[in-house]
Amino acid sequence: MYTQNQSTVIEFILLGLSVDPFVQMLLFHILLVVYMTTLTGNLFLILAVRTNKHLHTSMYFFLSSLSFLDICYTSSIVPKMLVNFLSSKKSISFTGCAVQLFFSLFLGGTECMLLAFMAYDRYVAIYISLHYNMIMNTMASFWMICISWLSGCIISSIDTYLTFRLKFCGPNIINHFFCELPLLIRLSCSGISTVNILKLVGTAIFLFIPLSLILFSYIIIITAVMTIHLGKSKAFSTCISHLVVVIIFYGSAMFMYGRSEHLVTEDTDKKVSVFYTVITPMMNPLIYSLRNKDVQKAMMQLIRA
Image: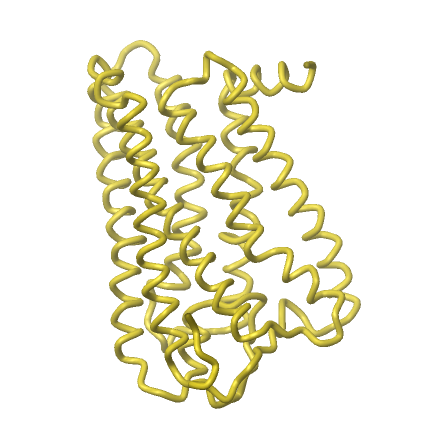
């Protein structure tokens, strides 16, 4: 799919989060613990939802799908970063970089869409609750998840293909811990107008449009909840966890993809990228389980089993 004869670069050097050997070892151990916590927490959440019949609803179907997505997303980036912490040559092949870019865009875009559908689910549950079971049935939830994955795959495939059709004449040093799209575009020595246009389109589709829908949904939700005399705190509790995840994920992603090039600072970019590639996947199961008694109960039953 990607022909290397279009480029003189056969590999990229990833500088990572630090060049200091001591800091690298410290980060290796910290991020290894974070990664294992991410895998364990999300896996437990998936199993808790699957094994507890009381959680077989659309909201928890979306939640378990988000956990599976987070496992895949963080696994497309963190293992390579951990290996590079221990390697003297912190390189990634041309093809490996293309594969990593594809999966990071694919899974990140899918999560953006999924979070928007989760906001719609909460909107239906609170604003038109009498019709919730009819609107958010199993088939509707299934198709929403399919649309999330399919749209992420299509846009990612186009972005990755066009990016690696560019010429990379050198330098081949990426001041980051993974192959991030904006940095790869800057390294190219050929025309990048088409890729930049597509990047803007992708940003609009996966960041600004879903975020606008989420904000619109929650404005209506908050307005509706304020009119409720009983159960107001419970209604807010079901939404606050999702809002926290949205703020962390979209805030950091928009900082990377939704700003002009003259605001780019590579060291800051790396720190911000850690939030949506490493921290958010770890925090999601913690945020949802800490504020949801049903999930807590299901997890405790799973542990005791």
